[in-house]
Image (cartoon, rainbow, N blue to C red):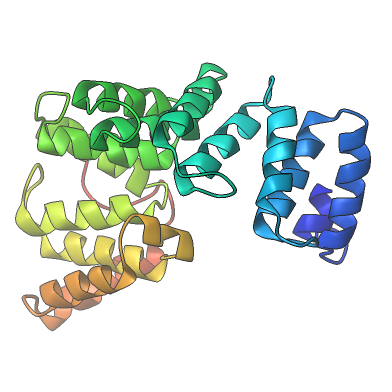
Length: 255
């Protein structure tokens, strides 16, 4: 199914993907059940049917962490079931028990807001840290935010910058935006408009639709253009050059 759905070496064909996934799912393949559930949830190659998606996710959830995560999402978003944060949290916990970093990050966000679980900043920070240590970029950014605000952990500018920088260097847009603000204001780093403009510019140019969960592209552009008004033309040219030459993990900013 994966090659048909992704169009790898074959024309993208969700109907074919669904057919082959169903054959494998009917033989008990849990990965295929999850893929089939995704097709039904998103209406790819089949009529959108949340009930069918729930059915296949539940069948795979006995041991598949992705199925548990997706069931949590269904309850959190109210897809095919009444919205129920407590049940969503239960499924996220089950997925986290199998080492799913996205589920850990979701539990952190729920603990931060008190959705489905008691509001608990220390628990939120702990979940972010667990997911961050598994390489989840959004969790790394979230942990930086916790250190910035002193929520669940002592306020620490050094650790804030360390986490923001780590994930910004990977190309994560929200962290690049956050790091831009820190260089503009001089919080945790020496104030540097050139580096601030570079990070804002990178965030704006690399923005993807899924990044809208974290912030808006308009906000990034406004931040970049606002700081540009404080800069000389040579500073702007240098910032633009640095953004053009930037590659993940190889920023030219000072340590």
